[in-house]
Length: 205
View 1 (spheres, one colour):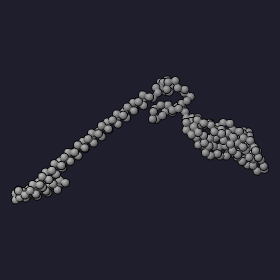
View 2 (view 1 turned 90 degrees about the vertical axis):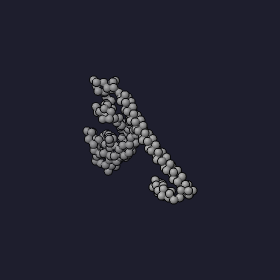
View 3 (view 1 turned 30 degrees about the vertical axis):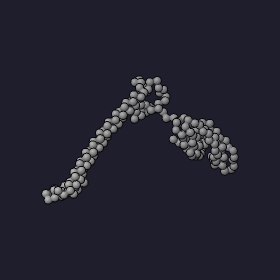
């Protein structure tokens, strides 16, 4: 744009001495002057926009920094105060803590709630000279706030508590803060089947 205006201006200046009274030249001179004015206005407007953008960015950056600082202060203020004698929050039950420190908060970590198996029962429902079929029932309690999806080993034990056979169960699901009951059949081959006296269920961690 500047180049075009400069060319027009130069052309007009070169011809001004010969055709001063030419109305066309006068009209062109007026147009060139208007173009120069408009170009100057555009440059000023562009500079103003850049200054506003830079100012807005700076203000926004300062506001974000201040907000982050306030959030950090609030988080620190909300942390429980520790008893110097125990290293735990005042009035806390030591049995609920595992002795570890959370690296992010610097606070003692609570023991993680572990699922528990209970109500394990089983009996032989069918037997032949090759295997015995066991009907097995058990329950899993999930004290955690997260849903559970786990596998389990079903152990067949002899009178001394030794494992004579192990079977597997997959994808045992229990909702958060819930208990679920499971039942199935398992086949144990002889001669181990004749030595089974009790059952145990071990959840995979």
